[in-house]
Length: 106
Image 1 (cartoon, helix red, strand yellow):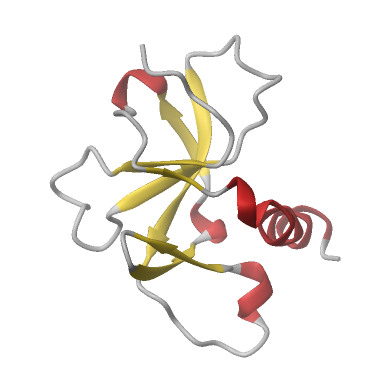
Image 2: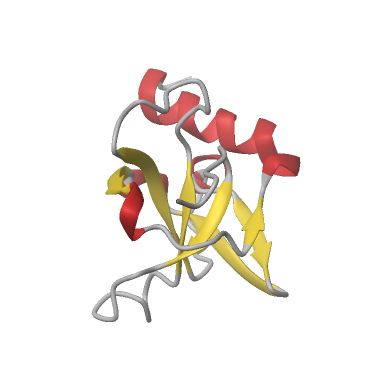
């Protein structure tokens, strides 16, 4: 199985939704690896909505801009995750800030 790490980015395995959501990012901590799923969020085309920059941080994958669409985070079976195409560890603080906003409102 693919070595999964927090902030790894994977291509969307679904041909049905891949055009709108080409990638997913693993948000789940590496410390919680005993389950057969990982908490992920899709990456979507950039959108500009007032104050949503923090909620949906913009990132670059293969020279294209996306936002991490945190309102749609959820579980994905690890068998569906292909080898990662990138890792966004360098964006850790912005991603964690977005998750703080999702779960605590601050």
